[in-house]
Image (cartoon, rainbow, N blue to C red; front, side):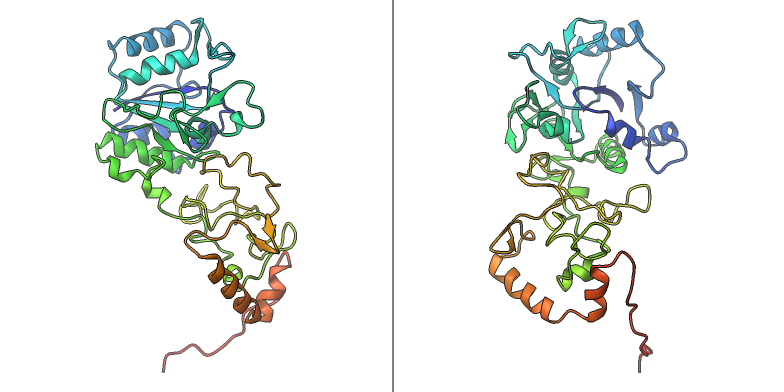
Length: 331
């Protein structure tokens, strides 16, 4: 499967994340999966006229294109002309190149939340009229339209994340190369289910604190980040605490609240990222699938049963109370 990767309106962070893939030989990893990288702006040697010739051959069908990967949001401004982002050396807006190439590609892949939903680039007044390939935040549409389907019959595959996890990208491309990714393998937002069927909460090392609602009160505290520090890990679809970053890390393990970067509209939550919005003292964003009444009842019961060890550790930056030693031999 050959892959063409273009960067649109974004920071390039998803490419930088890709370079952190857990492999000693990135290009050999691709070859082993049956993937040929036709061109990537940061990883390929070809430039100038060589690239323009390649793009033209892909656009007019002389070069078969199996997967078109777009990183960054699509800049439609000003006034729909796309002139805010012209592909260097062509005089043609990037959005026009993407439309032409997407019409030829067997698969179209949005790499990162900018390409998927518009992301950070579309925040605020959005003066560049940035959007995703097939979404504007959670609204279907985007550059290609809600009804777009690539030659394979699939919608744009949204590997959301800011940045996206390198393994989400490589595993998606490998599944496409093996012809093993179908519509049933995508969730309702067209994210690959192998990572989107999980919640960030799953595998979180702070889960004991969550169970007892023993909450962090300031940065660096060990407690659960949901109640006061803005963490949305109980609501956000991603396997960040199961498929760790760089083999050992995640936002919550590093002491940072999950800000829902795989979800549409995460860039404008309507409150500070490190603060939990509440009504009558109760967090507005409750865990997925949990009725409010149950949460209130369980939270009250959990707090009343919180061990002193957990309560003390929750508001400290290191363990101040260690678990008691008890006989554990089965009798």
